[in-house]
Length: 180
Ligand SMILES: Cc1cc2nc3c(=O)[nH]c(=O)nc-3n(C[C@H](O)[C@H](O)[C@H](O)COP(=O)(O)O)c2cc1C
Image 1: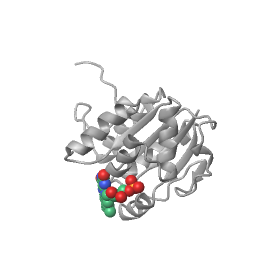
Image 2: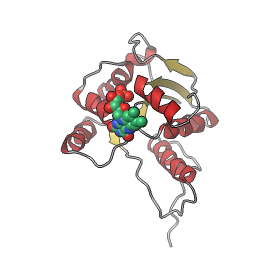
Image 3: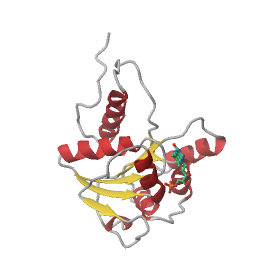
């Protein structure tokens, strides 16, 4: 499998770190593009340098992931800022991350948007609806308590496991509900 991972300037860069680590363990080929602000927030949030099999410059539209002819099993934007969400929803592809996401929509490939903001304005909600109608899956990193998390790490893992599930990748990060 081959997955494109976009990281934009929202809080929660640890989600991207854990997602990339999980894909590495699962031997999934990763193509990473990180926005300029995401790189700043990564340092601010104390997350180590993000690692992937292939790393692209967000300003370089010559990167492979800019073309629909480059095959992939889809893309995740984790975390996704409201600005990047707006870019995806409007097809305004002025950086490589946005272009790669736009490619996924036009090629009808899976696009998971881990939209991170709270509370949400009507603009955010409308952009989510627009992106969803175009084929994206909106997956905000919303906390769950039913699986009895003991740490924020457990919560991060659960969210990452959920995203893996959406790519059809079986994993042990998500605590599956087994009934009462
Ligand atoms: C520390 C920090 C945290 C931020 N967190 C969020 C966030 O969670 N959600 C969001 O939509 N924007 C957030 N922003 C604002 C975005 O980074 C800003 O809108 C930026 O233009 C996003 O650009 P990008 O999507 O190209 O990375 C944050 C900014 C900073 C400095």
